[in-house]
Length: 115
Image (cartoon, rainbow, N blue to C red; front, side, top):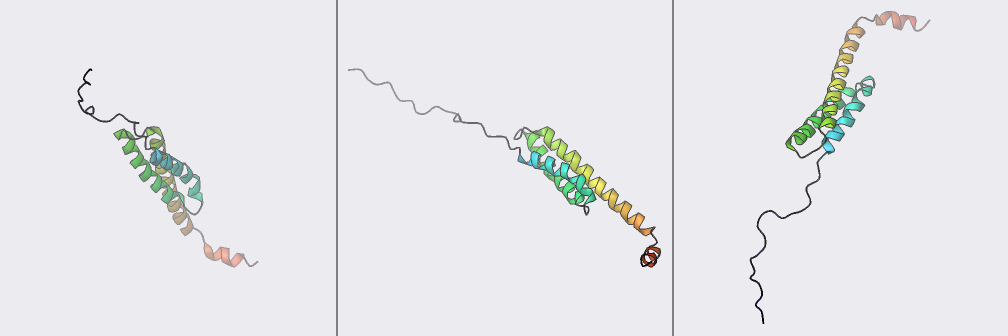
């Protein structure tokens, strides 16, 4: 009768498993918000809050990409850029509307509308 081989216990080190999936959601959402913020600048200035939200979410996605937890650095950069463009365009349009609105002679418009 032969003796069984000695038991040495489980192997040391980290268990081999499936690597964690990349966390690409923030970069993708930031890019979508940034792209949508540009045309929505003309719609009741919705581009300003959407652009700011896109820039913030994209910045967080960019931090994940730089840390190696996400693989969509280019999407996060696109969201950051388009979000900033949307916010700046919205603020510029708001400033232009305020300054142009002061130059309109509203009395002439209201007096002539009844004719």
